[in-house]
Image (cartoon, rainbow, N blue to C red; front, side, top):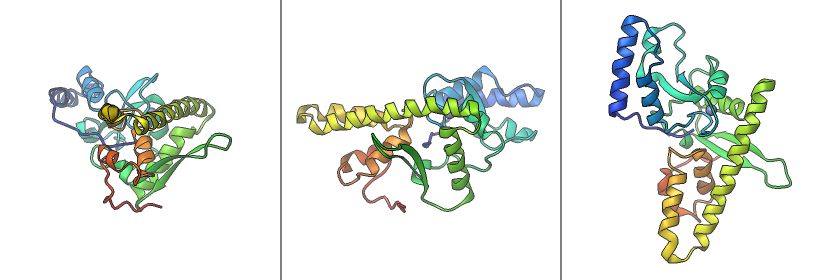
Length: 234
Ligand SMILES: [Zn+2]
């Protein structure tokens, strides 16, 4: 989970107008304008699991509205998620970190631990105290591992995509390291894309670099980090 900017784009403005209209006539918030604006803001990516492929979109209320129409039609409360994550989050995890306001990956470390021939698993480490951080970590664990027989099966597919993405990203970094000087800038550009908020599983990729920060110092600014960043690493 990484930060997404809620910019006031043309699509976002149209979504706010559509939401106000729907609210006054008590119609659904699920309008074409709202969907288009969320797709733009989240780059077609689920904000919770960061998967970009093969999922059905749902409009997610960060704070469950529970019939409160202010929360139900509030543009700032609407997020794009996949069905898998939306069903898991439901009203169960509240409050969680608001990724349109805070850098979640600076409050939680995202790591794959273990390697080939051992048990590999995904680990989420709190870098700060607080109920939002705690709830977000519990949600992430359920997202990547499932909580019912069906959700466990869906989680296998998400983890498979995540593992492949990380493997490709590691190869990209290795190629960057061995590239001739003349090619370095092209590789840097590719790496910048891979750790941007629009990329799949960006939080895990950023932490691969951060965990080797001395070695990849020149790449850290792409991740919104620097050697001077005061991460309370645990
Ligand atoms: Zn998801």
